[in-house]
Length: 251
Image 1 (spheres, rainbow, N blue to C red):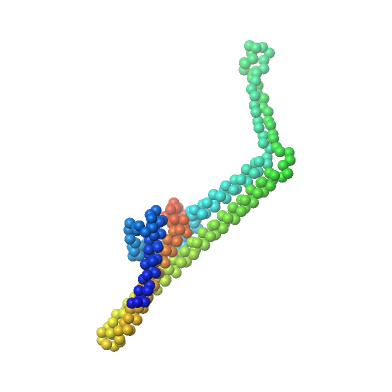
Image 2 (cartoon, rainbow, N blue to C red; image 1 turned 120 degrees about the vertical axis):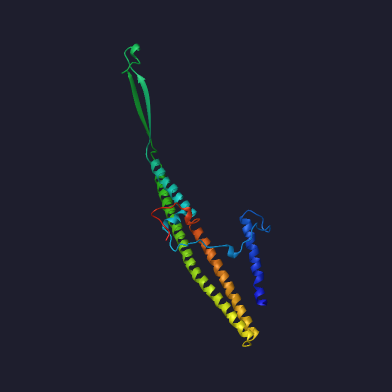
């Protein structure tokens, strides 16, 4: 019993810290408490967790969308740099009228148009515009590499979480089986104590083993819930945020 009580104080401290964190995240002052109490059994997993996900679901992640938008913006600068190297042409038009008599000055057939073009271009810029274009192209290559890195990291996150969920399921099943086995052991030892076959310390050892298996089961449940939340985060909020498509389905 004394050994079990040693575990209580650190857990109470961690619980208080997590409640303060929840209060802060919800815009409240830490220490004022929460409007509702949460217990582990009040949380539940989705009715169906996917074992595999379509690749295009990852595209809704904010970091991928930001990297993609940055790539488009930087790529547009290449077109601007190329356009700046071309001659800037300005066309102007003037209307007039010509006739041999004032009475026919604005009659049909006497109106004429003159169009003049003006092309301007820097004669010598020491390659400034050329190097600006090269700089824009290199910036585009850098943005493309960053985009690829973000995408690869996103796929790694999703793969890691899916693997963790599979491991969590096996760990939880093993923890539940161990707890049930420890409970059966307590029942068996209790009957033996009642019949005088074993002493009371043997029952205490069985109860201590049951306590350890119960803690392991609770930790396995919490780990599975945490990894489920991590899956939502890795997908940028969850697969339900994406518009349904006939060609894409969760398996």
